[in-house]
Structures are given as C-alpha cells and as structure tokens.
Image 1: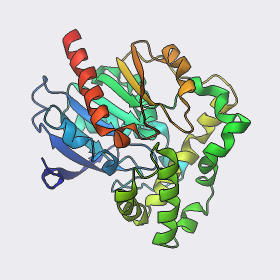
Image 2 (image 1 turned 90 degrees about the vertical axis):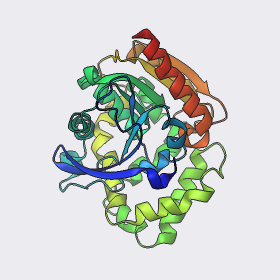
Image 3 (image 1 turned 180 degrees about the horizontal axis):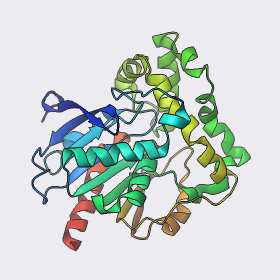
Image 4 (image 1 turned 180 degrees about the vertical axis):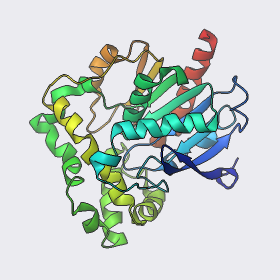
Amino acid sequence: MSQNAWQHHDIQVNGIRMHYVQAGHVGAAVDPKIVTLILLHGWPEFWYAWHKLIPLLEDRFAIIAPDLRGFGQTEKPPGSALEAYRLEDHVADISALIDTLGLRNVGIVSHDVGAMVAQGLAQSVPEKLAGLFFFNVPYPGIGSRWAAPEHLNDIWYQGFHQQPWAAELLATSRDAIRVYFANMLSAWAHDPHTFDDDIEAWVDNFAEPGNLQGGFNWYSAIFPRRLKIMQGAQVDWPVIDVPTCVRWGEHEPFMLIEYADRLGEFFSDLDFAVAPDAGHFVHYEKPDYAAREIEAFFTRLAARA
C-alpha cells in the first residue's frame, strides 16, 4: 500500500487535537485478533519517521502513528512546558487515543521520547497493552552515567532546547533549520547519509510555526526528572510487567549500548538484543530488520496467549 492510501486523521483526546496516520488493518477495533501497533516517535522526529517501516508492517498489523503533543501536526497547547508538556500529559494523550479509537490488543512500538511515553503507559494502564517494543530506551537505569564528563558533550542539545530564545534563533531561516537537523540526524545515525534523501521533509516539518518550540518543550518538561536521574537520586519508576522487547542500536552514539545493562531491573519480562549496524534510529536505518523483529516479537506473544 502506498503512502497515498494512508489515512490522515485529527482527533480530540485529553483536551487537545491530535494528528495521526492510519494504515494496515482498519478493522482492528472490532477484531481482537488483529494487533494494533501504535508507533511513538522520538526526537527529532514526527510521524513521518516511521514512513519506511509502515509499508513493511501494514499487511500484518493495524498501524496508528501519531504526532506527539507539541510535535508535527498535533496541537501545541498553551501554557508553559511544566504546565502542558509533562510526561504525564503525553501518557494521558495516548491512553485517551486508545480509548477514543476503541482499540484492543494494542502493542506500542517506540523510540527515544516515545519510549518514555510507552513506559509511562505500561506503568499507569498496563491492562491496555499487549506488549512493548523499543528501539533504544532512555530509562532510570542509565542513572548518573548521563552526566559523566565524557558524555556531557553528547547531550548538549538538551540544554540548548531549554533556552527561551532557542526556537526563535533556529526559525530565522530554512537554511538554519536544515543545518541544525542535518547535523543532528547525520551524527546520530551509524551511516551519516541515512537521511540525505529525506532532509527536506524534516525542514518542512520544523519550519511550521510552533513546531520547534513544541518539540523543545519536552526537554524543559522532563528536565527535573532527568536531573534527579543524572544525580543518581531514586525516582518513582515502578517495574514494568508488560512483555517487552528491546533492540538497541549497536552504534548508538549517546545512549551507549552498555547503558542497557540494568534493563532487567526495570522490565520483568524482557527480550533484549543488539541491533547490528545501526545507530540511534534503528527503525529508520534498518527498516527491514526492524519489521522482522517487531513481527517476530508479537507473533511470540500471540503464541503465549
């Protein structure tokens, strides 16, 4: 099925208008045997980050790929980041999306920011989820390693995004946006040319009014929680019992592969493996591999049921 056949929708959930793309089996709400995959993007992304993966999954699954709160074509609600863009707000959005669409047998496929949202869902509404699939996952077990001196240069952007002038500075021109995101995408992918053919889609998206600040708001909202983790403090993060699969990029440049060493403390039912020849964007860099791993995991879950 081509992208032209994918359906774009807007829906009211949790007090905001959320945009999402629908593909694959559209009858999943009434057929519990069909798994609906909700694809939750990360930074610097929007729904389109899944456009290579969706065609490889839509014959087997129902697909829902939303733009998260503040990203892409989804509404940017008024209020400060700490008032309107908290992790809890994102979790409530996706929980309401599941309810409003009447979805059952839901699997979450996520990455980066979306992986934080997926963990929040699994902690707050585990009964709504059949399984979790992560491509790299920020989690509290990384702890103070986030703040190691040799690591701070890799996460410079997190501080930059919290500056009140950052979005306005980048929005001065399409060239500025292109340079910023081309640098970030090429640095984080194992093959620096991975995004060359698609960079204008990223420029188009982040040139839309509000889209830079909408994404940056995530970093301001999550910073108090992230700071506690970086300081080695205990955070309220219940163990997740939803069946979980993690495929971590072998060449992830800043969420280093060794940071996966404590996943078993936070996920009680874990299937972990290294994703070969991939960096931060496993789903985009290696879509064929990603699709095979997703299908295999949810097939195994169905056999367990």
